[in-house]
Image (cartoon, rainbow, N blue to C red; front, side):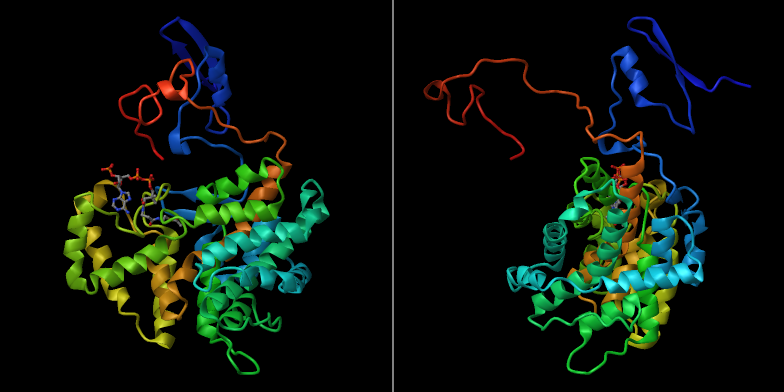
Length: 435
Ligand code: ACO
């Protein structure tokens, strides 16, 4: 059998090392034997952990949670059951599922003080900003959450976070609309209760439309985990300092808030409104190809094929439209996809629709406001963040995350007194920097 090693020769010195290959990887620390670091901006080819949670084959468009194909879970499971699978590692038995459901719904209420905290935000605050701040504030309500090595504490915070995220999210929305908060209705399903907290007005009991409730549940399943994406990496990085999971989730949600990640669906809807009709598609494609803008909802760091989640979302869009009426943006999106997938710019770069391309169109049809799109993503992703965080905390190979850098700044120089410096603060003719 061939040796399971990689031989590296430093041609500057002739020094040679044999590096063991384990599970398709080599340890970057081996390079230290040659006095080298591995330089990998944006961690394009660096595995920072071993994980048993999500599997992605980006070339074949495959996503599995704990081994189960996303298509099967979307068709047969529910969000709460999938969250159990992600967090615990196995599908629940009937009694375990009953207990899990009870434990999550038990924690849907938030402390009354938290309402006052939300009141402090400006009347027009973006709900994602409110969510990030408020989930971070939960840390002060549960100081025992700092016992991250304690199993019972980890379980309790997981239930609380999965239970309370929809409540905080809905309160954030109601605040931004000046509407009274609606308390959780634990007779309803996870997504039915969320819709009730969002949309209930004066009626005694809110009855969610079963098709919309189910569509949202499927969307939550599709967003529940996605291996080492930007926000999950943030969750793990914060978790590696042994900070409590509330501040770690706040940080992960902050990473999700950017337009390259969880806010892309917001951007897609803005983009589709801006072009207005299918006639605007060629003009947009031209701008994208000229490098003037990106086609939002297209492209993915890992998927170099159709994102399997986008395929499922496209299907459920039609179920939603049966109830809500067709969102005219779908025709523009379909035309955009059709043209893009024939165009060499997109084909050669393997740019396909990602999960965000169609999700915003469904949310909009369901009357969910655009600013809430990343918030919906955060609710669902909390299950994945918690599972990944627990995996990190228990991983004996992990330490505090602390990457290397390659220093490209000044060599040592002497301090120049203020009155001897030129305008701009340095001896250089002009100081131009990133800030
Ligand atoms: N539109 C136009 N061109 C694109 C797009 C896009 N959406 N995405 C990538 N490209 C081009 C780049 O310009 C680059 O071309 P070049 O080689 O000629 O310079 C090439 O494709 C590779 O792009 P990178 O930026 O290197 O790809 P990366 O893996 O870093 O980025 C990302 C992935 C951020 C998702 C990117 O595709 C993008 O910005 N997409 C739009 C935003 C989006 O939809 N984000 C949601 C992602 S899914 C999620 O987070 C849930």
